[in-house]
Length: 209
Image (cartoon, rainbow, N blue to C red):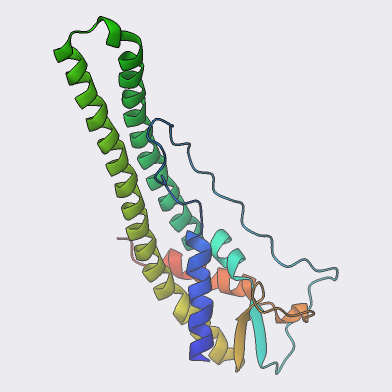
């Protein structure tokens, strides 16, 4: 069960951090558009009313995307990533604007500049180009670092919840419904809301940092 549990944890933290790559290396003259966070995939649809958990069942499932997108900790992690992306995109856009202005000046005024002024402007364009590229690389690095930090923290919180539920119910397996390929399941085996409830409860009682 431990190996399966770790696979679920990996899927969970992946669901939290999956999003558009921040500030990919693009021609620096083009402004970087703010990223859009795709809406999480909805839980598996069911046509029947909620069913009670089958007593004695040894297998259950959760919708890990729902856990990552609707739990308190999952929402907090997403908000942190979005905040970082917003900050980095703003920095890149501001630098891109400087570069565009310099290039516009280079195109419209080069004919009336003396050689020294023209050379100085060329150096300025080169400098701004390198700065844009550096900001793009820095943004990617900072985002990856934050992702890693959030993954470790979310895994630390999710693992004991999965352990507790598995032991209490005597489960042999707890799998992710989004990635298991099942053609049909008894919806009473869905423990998604229980996992979210326990994660949220633990978040409320955890000491504030």
